Amino acid sequence: MAAKADMDLTAKGAGATLGGKYEVYRLGAIGGAPATFPAVKVLVEGQGWTLVPSPKGETWGWLDKGPTRLLLNFTTGKDGTWLYLAELTQRAPAVATMPTNVSPSGTPSGTPSGTPSGTPGGTRATPPASTPPTQGAAAAPVANTPPSASLPSGPRRFQFTRTEFDDGWVAVEQPDYVQVTKGAITAYLFYRVVMTDQMRPPVTEVLDYFWNRDGRPRFDLQNANRRPEESSYPPLQYVEGDVTERATGKRAFAAMSVSLNTGGALSILVMAPDKPTYYAAFPRAADVERLINYNKFAVAPGDLAGYWSESSAASAQMYYVQTGNYAGMNLAASSHEFWIAPDGTYRSQHTGATGMVRNQKIYQDSYRGAWRVSGNWEITMTNRYGGKSDTFFMQFEVVKGGRILHLTDKTAPGLQYHLGVQ
Image (cartoon, rainbow, N blue to C red; front, side, top):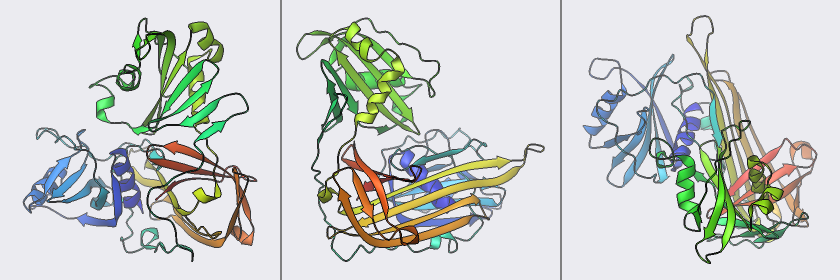
């Protein structure tokens, strides 16, 4: 379970998608010496593979032979030295080879790490569970059979592409962003992307990268002003100023805010006729980020049929305060799957593990029942926990190439699902 969570997070941070096959090896000596990442590299390349390490010198990388690409992760902890392998169904972008004179990093620090699947992010190598890979939660079979009615296939089409909000804002889905307007103000909510090394120092500044991508093609920026927001964490990436619209030559006032979160970035570009109009709507630089909430669209019954899923994991390396010795890893991982059929039936499966590795509590629950919608913002599912029905607030968030279905339990708002469709 620990190996799978670690590999999934690493792949998402690198823009790759893993398949369903994972292998975990406990390594002995290589060439009569303790196993090291450089030794593994020499070993696999002697067998005809090419190992392209992480560009940051971390002990993971891409393993290539012909058309096959695997994700490889090497980690050393109190329980030994381990090698994780996983197949890819979607290849990641090319990764620069680590210089031969760089020494790969070893055991990670004690900072917690983790990210949900709807919002990609990076990870560090972590010690695995001592449980063999044939035992525990990782070995629990995950049923892939849908409800009795067949599920749709092919490109998805969703009914609602426009939302009119009570406060006067109007959101319209576009290929690369959601366009939000109110009166004379127009905002572009560009879809979230995974942060790469090309977007941050030392290659460039985050704000410069996104302004060049999203702002410069639309505007000539004259007197740029980067308003600081000391109370924001991560630090707010923000610039504003007078602009000339390239398409029309019209003068205006524009601002860009880049929201960073768990390895992803989302840029928001706002245009107003003049500075007073803009400041009346957004007095503080941080106010621009509330526009993210307008990426919200209704759900038609015909939109729901399909296989929806999410997975998430978070881990923390633990160390003894008195000695500094490694004390193990605390891991929380979960997976939620819904098969929603067009005939009004559904099936769901919920799997997870929490606690210290070697002593985790593992759960797996499955439900079958019927579903019905009320309007376009609520869904009720029967035969949930204890045989009761659950009603969820539901809404779509548009992402590049698809949508995320957000479900929030009406009576227990802390119970939420953020599901992508396949």
